[in-house]
Length: 255
Image (cartoon, rainbow, N blue to C red; front, side, top):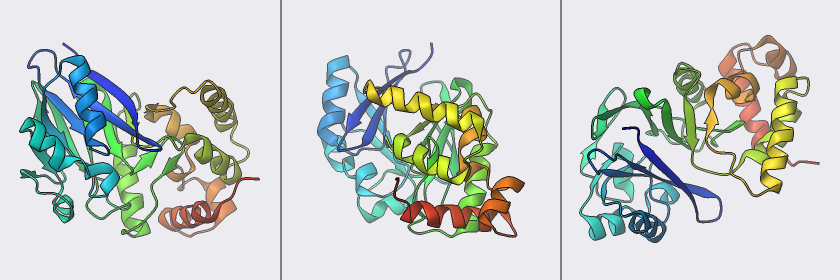
């Protein structure tokens, strides 16, 4: 049977994700921004939390680990950097695999936002949980990594099947769209996407998940190798253009 993915708001702008396998009755928390919200959501569905898969160490992604483990006895799976704020049971890195029932996920190194950031790709289910590495029309701030590292990470995401649904961790899309239009103003696909986003947010609808195929057409951070963006933003190499885009986004204020 296919996985059930329950998405719900956490904190001010995070999303929580519970992934449930009806066959094995296992349930995985993808990150843990708010332990109480996760425990409540699982209890409402009669799901027993058996694992946590962390993407990176930031408190709004791993801060609920210990409380959820204390309540459920679950196994915490995470990159080594998560030990900065929480004990973990299994350290994972690029190329490792993890499972929920018969569903296998590949761990992908997407360092840049933090150096040890990972994503979890379930190819048979056409989904990837990408944390703060990439957003709808955006990417995470480069808190720890370097531009070339982050650009290489984004190439790994771009290399996934275009039909992959990207479950990113924040509702940042409206603000990201404003910068994307500034960065790539002649992109007709982006203009249509931005209009759709305005409507969805006006109706208080989430813009997550997003399909990789659409992001490849519209997300400037995934398109820094394109000649038009390199001409507009400079940079001899794509990662240099990416760095200029990321720096501009850090300082951007919509009109």
